[in-house]
Length: 461
Image (cartoon, rainbow, N blue to C red):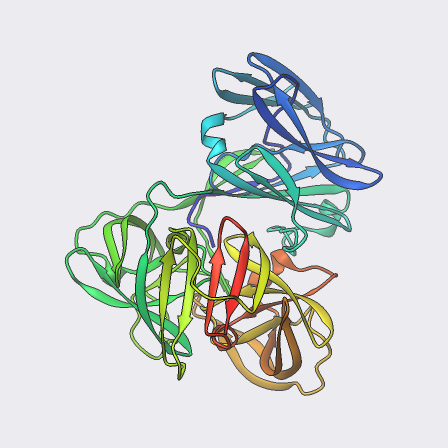
């Protein structure tokens, strides 16, 4: 899920740009006989560059998302657009010129703002799937850990996507302006629960969820009279631009009951204090957690310091959430590079000999594997449905994985549930199984440390 507006670009190009002379980098997606790659060019002050789109054999698009959040574009082989970009006065402006003579002006971006953001761009072109990270709008590198993301997967007719490229971006501010560091105790009872309080002292239980891209509160936790702002998505298509209702995706389907978003002057969890916390408001949260819960503490707030750490106390019923400026003391038993995909931390591993990609998910009690990529477990049995924030359920089967590897860590005889969850759809790949490491797997270590700058998870025993 993303609280930032979701920009769905159908049958329309967006982005902009390219040239030469030190000034403003421009990142162009190109296809050639070797596949898809990112080419870094530059625009000098006042310089204009014109690109001719050729989705199958040349320029696919230029990476210039409208701002933080997620965007996607479907670009057809028949598109004969020209992309005209200009850099002047610290601003990038761009215009798409279609073959029929019509034009679309794209939102201008300042280079200063782009420097403060990281962009993950995914390209799906037939059987070709590639992902790249553009750090600080300065350098691009291939992302071989996390899969290419495609939010249109399973939602568009095959005939429409057969000779088309889907380009998706996930953009976030690389470092918070005012880091929030501190510690908060949590209780473990299948989920991890932390106590959160408003500025007036009113408190309630939050689920600590590493796989939630946005923080959520129930309407009952919002002070009477506090203003709610509308949330919406914008769709650009050949038919024009329209505003759509905001429909975030939960693990088991679209989340209903979104009332908007609101700003808390202060949200406190232990010694963690988040100022001006912007959170999504739901009419209510489902009664599935075994105790009253007023909210979800998600990654938009949890990324507020250089390191995110979970420390599990002996006995497994308690622990500490720490947002810290440095890694914990001691030598980790394993180091696992990660990819940040839609605010999910993904690491590489395997399950019963099959390659796997794991999402760190403290919002799930245990391990869940996508049925479309799961190995042929021989001990599957029917089980109860998995429930999510949408209030519905998804059928699942219970199994036991004989061997699970997370980087160099190995676990034996791991209980797992197998299900086709909607949340998996944008990340599916023929090359690996996809699943989540829930609380039961994360708690197999004494502590874990997510280092945002190094893009590495460190595991301690």
